[in-house]
Image 1: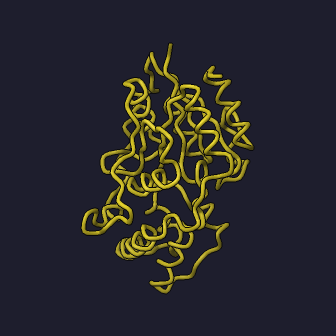
Image 2: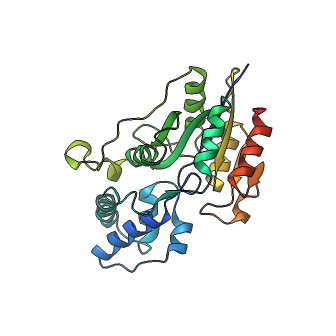
Length: 258
C-alpha cells in the first residue's frame, strides 16, 4: 500500500501570521523613515520569502543596500515577536490530528525562513508528527520549485520520524546570526514531475505559488480560501476548501484515506 503525504503551506494555510508579519515590516520601515502599509496591502505582498516581502514594502527603486538594512531590522523585530498575534486557523489542529490518525504523513513546505518555520510549528503544533518541516534554507530552492515536494515524499517513503528541527526560543543572534538577510533563492532545478512509486502526495496552500508547486511536481493541488489570497487567485487548483472540514473531505477523496 502506498504511503500518503499531505504537504501544507504555512502562512495563510495552517497559521494566520499576517499580524506579526505586517507589524515587523511596519517597524522596519519606520526605522528607515519609509511610509507604511495596511494589513490588507501586506496580504498581497507576502510570498516568495521575507526579502521579497520587504522589497515590495519599500518604495520602488530602493537600493540593495537599503533593502538589506531594512531586512535586517525586520528580522530583528520579527524573530522576537513571531508568535504575538499569530495563531492557527480554527479547526486546523483537529484536521491535522485526524489526518495523522488515518495514517497520513504530514509535511510543511514554506517560503518563510527555516528557523521561523520551525519555531511556529514547534510553538503551535508540537504534538503533530510532521515528517518534514521545510522553509527557506541555504541550498533549497523556494516554491514553486518542486524540490520541496520530492524531499517530503522521500521522507514519507522512508518512514522518517517526526522532524522537530533545532529550534531556539528567540533565535539568539550569537548562534544563528542574520543568515535570512543573505540567504537568496537559488535557480530552479528544472526537475521533472516528482514520482515515487510507493508515495502519493497532495499539496495544500493558499496561493498560486502553492498551486504551481503542485503542478511542477505533478501532484494534486488543493487551495484553501481562508488564507491571504482572494479566491479568484485559486481557480487553477484541483479543488478549493472553504473550511478545514471541507479540506479533510477533499484530502480523503484525493488520497483514499478514510
